[in-house]
Structure formats: structure tokens, C-alpha cells
View 1 (cartoon, rainbow, N blue to C red):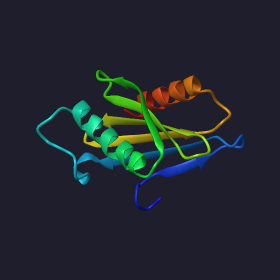
View 2 (view 1 turned 180 degrees about the vertical axis):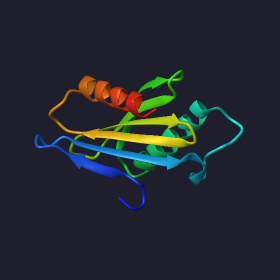
View 3 (view 1 turned 60 degrees about the vertical axis):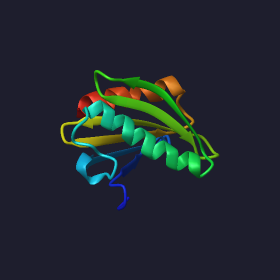
Length: 119
């Protein structure tokens, strides 16, 4: 998608993943004088608040300060969109998995493994 920089992929089973890597400095909330993980938390707040303001349910699932990521979800009134927002050098990584074929735990494991491959 042009506005978010996300690339969407769908396999034969209907599992959709999206990946975006964007410069941190491109975001209005980014602050040079705080840690990468603090900026990831700002990224999560910025995006999740947008969904909440538009009457979607959003919830933080997990965070890892050492690896600098947050896993969270919002429900699009069909099913959960599970995201991992993380930090990698001067970029934010935005990873998504969207499917009803996997449990939430399977989605989390997938996102964590994908993040570690791209960190």
C-alpha cells in the first residue's frame, strides 16, 4: 500500500502477512532523545489509538524491551489483525499476520520469528 509502505502477501491457505520497514524519522511522534524501545512504544500508541478512536477493539498482547518490539492486535469486526511493531537500526518494522487458520499463539510465534530474521 502506497501510504504505509506495507507489502501484503497471501499464501494458498489464505494466510495474509504484511511487512513494512519505514524510517523512524518519517513519523511525527519519533524522538531522537529517547531509546529505540521507547520509540516503539510511541509507535504502538500512535497506531492503536487511531483504531480505538475509530471504534475498533485494540489490545497489547506482549512486549520485549530487550529485542525492542511490541505485539498487539485490533479486531476489524471480522477477525484479529495481529501486529509486531519493532525497531531495527534507523527503521521501524511493522509486521502483520491476518488469518483465522492459526491460533493467537501461532501468530505470535510466527511474528517473533519473522522479526528475528529481519532485525
